[in-house]
Length: 68
Image 1 (cartoon, rainbow, N blue to C red):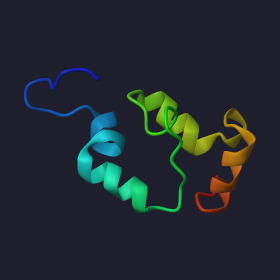
Image 2 (image 1 turned 45 degrees about the vertical axis):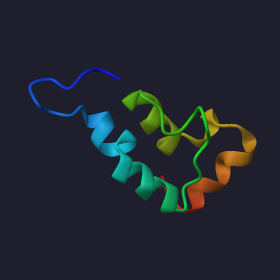
Image 3 (image 1 turned 60 degrees about the horizontal axis):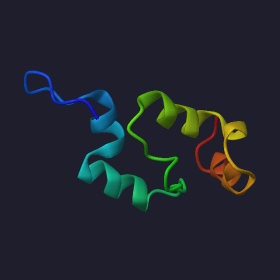
């Protein structure tokens, strides 16, 4: 993860990797996949949420909770 620039946090940190956000994702019905989601890449995180075909077969069930 990149260092904070002038006191601002990167968007990926705010949406996916800061401790309160990690708790929120853990409590959501969207399954976490260790090593896949959440990651340090904003692109990979949105890819995980929006493109079910990029995931292993067992993780496709999340689309019922997070419609695309």
